[in-house]
Amino acid sequence: MRTHFDKQLSDMQDEILRMGSMVEESLRMALGALAQSDHETAQRVHDFDATINAQRFAIEDFCVQLIARQQPIARDLRSIVAVMNMIVDLERMGDQAKGIANIALGLGPHPEWEGLDELWQMGDIVIAMLDQCMKAYAAHDIKMAREAALRDNEVDELYLRLRRKVVQRCAETDNPALVQSYFDVMRATGYLERYGDQATNVAERVIYIFTGAVDEINPEPGETL
Amino acid sequence: MDENIIEVQDFNFYYGEFHALKDLNLSIKRNKITALIGPSGCGKSTFLRSLNRMNDTIKGTRVEGKILLDGKNIYDEDVDVAVLRQRVGMVFQRPNPFPQSVYDNVAFGPRVLGMAKNGDLDAIVEESLRGAALWDEVKDRLDESALSLNPGQQQRLCIARTVAVKPEVILMDEPASALDPVATLSIEELMRQLAENYTIVIVTHNMQQAARVSDWTGFFWLGRLVEFGETDQVFRAPKEELTEAYITGRRG
Image 1 (cartoon, rainbow over the protein chains, first blue to last red):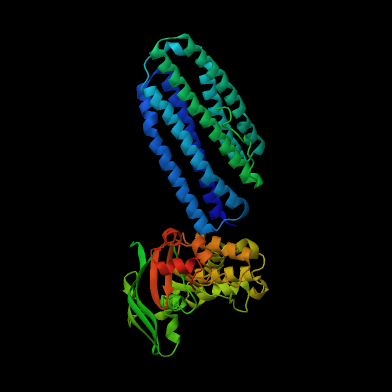
Image 2 (cartoon, each protein chain N blue to C red; image 1 turned 120 degrees about the vertical axis):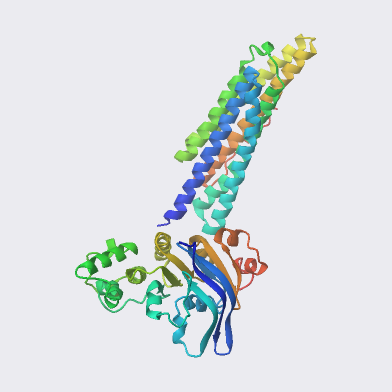
């Protein structure tokens, strides 16, 4: 019974998981490039964004084809609609990674970042959030998706702590080059903060597939900014 | 082998004075499912029946143009229509098993054509029933009347009967319209499996079915082929306004 359609739905799932891995890897590489001022890797992340965008449109195209040809209903319909939303967030998460790579491209050695560990902790958490979202999606696990989304609170806390530190350091220096460098830290942090918000959106879509309800887990994610 | 198994060239069909099919040109792809859609009276069933000359039996009909099956015009005078219909089989709207046993229904064609020597007939019957995804359900009921099967099984039996004579093309005229949704889906799944070995041309009123099951779609309107293309394209972005209006239900 309907093996063909089931195969297509499972292909769609494989493609979104693949896109998730791409976006995850992209941020991991971007953060590595940022830490090491590694311009070559930063350039690779920058260029890779086009591949992520292409994947988004390929999945969108496939979804439209499924709707046109299979007239999906109930959970089938929800999973396709959810995927069409997820790919928008994933594509933008790729843009955040590219933003960080662009900062890395303009960065020389930066010993003054010593002690700003919150930046890297935020990176680790948002990458883990996305990873957990994708696992929840593959495993149909609503609880796991919700837990992933709730980690955004940790990200917001780290963001506030880091901002206080950076403001303090800016106040203590009269060197414009250092202020510029700290400004780059805050830009990178902003990208990570949005990456976390978008991972939350992805988690909400995963939950929607299995419950049919749109459940805003962090209703005002931008409040702390 | 050529990708196209059937080439239709400047084909016209008349019922007496009535010009039913007008200047058709299209290619049917080998081992693909081609769906023909359009409102009642648009000519799609007439065209389907032209593909194995089923219309020959209707008085006062005539054709112009060619339908080439592997390069040979099926309307040439030297064509043996019985052989043509073995190569191009047909499944009808209502399951029409013979009032005989399940076994004899499937064995009918091979017997008439003298295809089976000795014990081969059993093998052909089994293979055909397997090919029609019916074997597991009837293997212990081969001697029972075909009329004791449910409608979905009867239709698959008719498909097995068609497959038994090893055709190249299977024509299906609304094969699921008399079936419930579950039996319909099983016929659609079966069509996908059959397409691995056969070329299928299906006429359907059910546009969703055409969208689900076919690789190529032709839209007929007043005896003309308005649009013919890959199903993905026809159902996502038809080239013709008229196709768009019909498949979205704004015109029928």
